[in-house]
Length: 390
Image (cartoon, rainbow, N blue to C red; front, side, top):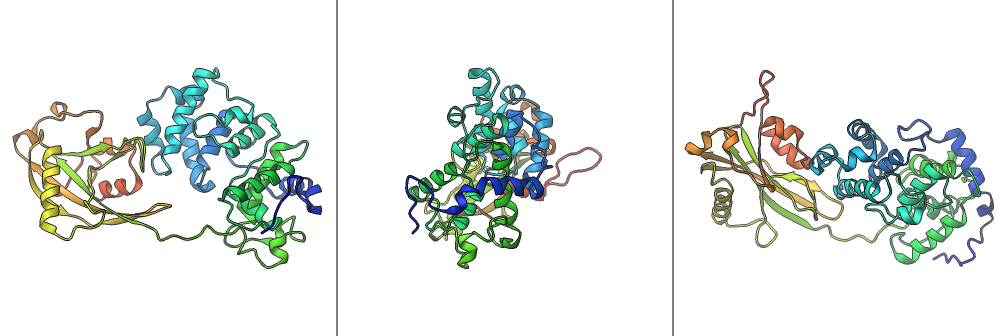
C-alpha cells in the first residue's frame, strides 16, 4: 500500500496539479449548471446537500422547485417540515431534508440568516460535513479549503496510485492530507469545480475517459492498467433481506397514512401502516399472518368502520444501499355506518392522516409507497376524486 508521509506527496505531479486542473476546467469543465456562477451561499449550500450521493441530472428539477418554493434561507427555515419533506419526496436519503430544514433554522437564528464563511464553523451546522463545508466556503467565499467527496477520492486514488478502501480511517486521512497539499494559492472556486468535474465526467467509476484527462500521462492507475481497480472497492458483504407487510386501509375515498419516526429509513415522511414479521422474514403460516394483519388494521381503522376484507396485492422490492426491502401490500376495505361519515368528522392525530387523492399528491411519500398508492387509485379528470377497488 502506498504510504504518504506528513510532508506529502513525493510526486512531481503535485507541483503542477492545481494549475493543470484549473486550465482544464476553464476549457472543458461544466459552466452552465443552475447553481454555478453565483456567490449566494444559500443556493450553493442547497445544491451541495442535494448532490450528496445523487446525480446532477436527478438534482436539477428538485433544485429548481426548491428555489421557487423557498427562495432564501428564511423562507426555508419558516416553512413547515411537512412542506419540505413533500418537496424532497423521491430524492432519497431523507435525513438530508430534515437536516436541511434544521440547518436553515440554525443559520437564521444563530447567524443572522447568513452562512458562515469559515469552513470549520460551517461543518458544525446540521447536515454539513467537512467536505461539503469546504465546497460552500470555496464557492461562496474563496476559502482555502479542500473537498473530498466520492469523485475526488476516485481522482486522487487513480492519479496518485493510492491503494486501500478510501472509507477506512487510515486511507481517508492520507487522502485528506493529499487533497490539502494540492490546493492552489488562488482560483479556489475554479479548482474546486475542476475536481468535481474531472471525477464526474472523465474519471468516472465504470468507464474512465483517460485519453481526455489532463493527467493521462502522469496517472499511476492508467500507467499500470489499474483504472478499473483503483480506488479499492469496499469489501463485499451479503446484503440483508428485510420483509414488511404494509396496510392500504381505505374508507370511502380516503386512505390511511402513518408518519414515520424522524430516525431510520424514510424518516419524517408519510407511509402506509406496516407490520414486520416477528422473525424479520416472511411468515410461513398464512392464517396467522392474516390474523395479525386484520387485528392491526382493525385497531387503526376502528373509528371508521370494521374490516370487511383483506386482500394481498402485488409486492415490490426496494433496494437501499445496505439492504433489500421486500414490501407486500394488503388492501383493507372498511365497512360500517361510520365509514360513510364526512371526512371532517374523521379523527386523526399528528402520526396518522386520512388522505384523499389531492392529499396523496401533496404529501411527502417514499417512492415505493407512492407507487403502491398510485396503483390503487384512479383520478377522474373531472373531479379529482379517489376511486379504490371494491
